[in-house]
Length: 365
View 1 (spheres, rainbow, N blue to C red):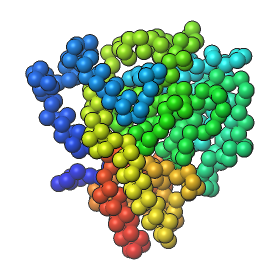
View 2: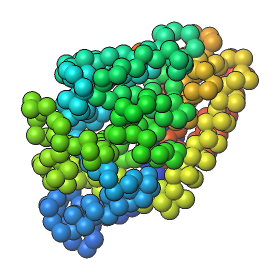
View 3: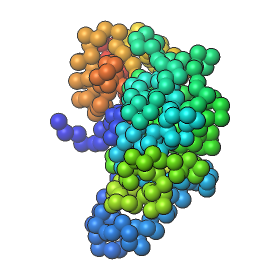
View 4: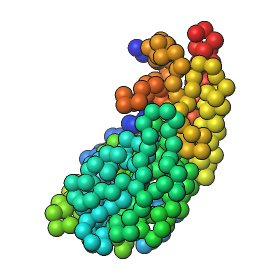
């Protein structure tokens, strides 16, 4: 199947990227900064790449208002890799034996908890109910520990479409936030967390680089078993270059940071994301064919999940939407249904076109 225009890609990741950034990367592919080669072909330790790296760090620090007492690392292995790196770097801070608390609100935080259990006690503070209306367990039901090294949570569960409206209150225990799918989608107070991490492939750039933001006092506590490549202290001391980093993914992420700045920054991204998600949720809520199964107070602004009440129409919906250039709307296999991921780079026109298609499909159903 071919299109004479770019599709509207609603994939959860790798996800749609800003067209302007793609064009810039294409124009620089053969001759970056007049060097006669691409950014992928120069040494990661060259003066040119190191200058780029420092500029990218500065742009991210400005966009997210990251204080200087936080280190910014560009690592590999994705969020899955950090599920191991986090307990290896932090669990030793527990008052007694290695231990961490976990708010399990969906499949991704559940994966994080199970991985951490390999390195110490991964205590579940609260957990989600499977089936029915997805929600975040009420704060008064949480069973927080008094001796945990940290509390881990996933800010936005891409599979179920559940998003925390704000950072959870966990007292004085350091908070670890998985912000893979809503990084730079709205302003956040970084200082509410000890550690934040995000894979780039959803809201920033191509797969291959993972951003880790860690408060300086949480460095230097890695378990002896920690591989050198996963030790945040080593990475911070070597500008994330213990080994050859994913230079193209870092370069492209930097282009996206410039794009976000030029669009008006994170506040503008939040404004656009609210407009897109409200348009889609408002239509779903008044529909007789579609339904959302997430409590309104914790609906994701970046991953809108919905179901056709007559699931016998799923195949036709996906086939016809794809023909219209609305692709990757199938929900995750673990929960079924449909999912529209509407990250920063998804234009309002994409959501408008999707709603128009959904309305016409419902009319004919």
